[in-house]
Image (cartoon, rainbow, N blue to C red; front, side, top):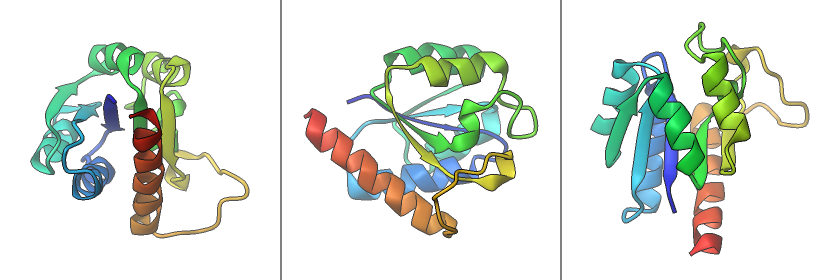
Length: 138
């Protein structure tokens, strides 16, 4: 399974996702895709196996991914203070990959029916879902 984590800005959420994924699934390869070099570096430092940066990398790798993890804003053009380009959002949306998204209201997207939770709780939920998808696909 090709597991991709997408993040931007400082890469803090992506870093936490990578750490939790690697703790739960140590043999699983994780590809870090950052909208900028700082985000990619943070995810690589957290244990991602490979990393790439920028619009082209994100657009290309989304076509090849089996699972994409990130905040819900990666589906919305111009979110993350404008770091998610329309092409990136379209690539994530059009990807055949399963998407495991964290409901971060800072992106201006409100997912009704999802209760308030801490970032740690959301990350643990994302890892549980990713593990289920990986085990089902193996």
